[in-house]
Length: 165
Image 1 (tube, rainbow, N blue to C red):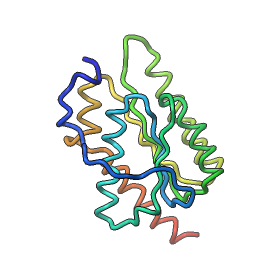
Image 2 (cartoon, rainbow, N blue to C red):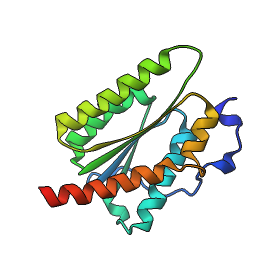
Image 3 (cartoon, helix red, strand yellow):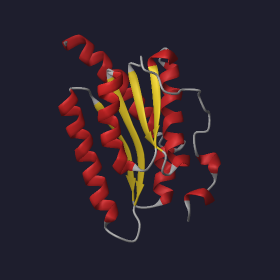
Image 4 (cartoon, rainbow, N blue to C red):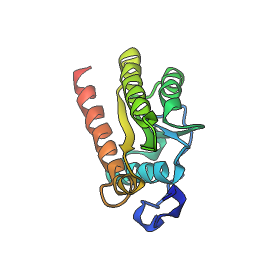
């Protein structure tokens, strides 16, 4: 099944008007590859952040051309430019017919960890890695809503780090 061929009602469709923001506290760096899925993750993030009353002016979203592989370098450059307090990196890697998925997943996740260490900015791993499109839909959509989890992790880390700095 192609990503475009599934029931889109399973996704989180409520959209918010968040874009580039050079003064953001929380930055979301999102891959444009598998965009229906990454949009659903971001909508889950924004829905949850709205329930915490986080000021929308403190959020920023950067849509990165390409896929998950491009996310770590873009994240590092955006951290250096914008200086957010926390980043959520969002992409979706779905296994295909080759081992490319395994190499890509491991490379991207390790690179994001390195970006966090090098910049001293927490980078939340919002990279969904699944073996099937159905698993991806479940995780990014209404069933598991991993975007909500990523948002809560970001809020909790912001609070935690504000108390130890």
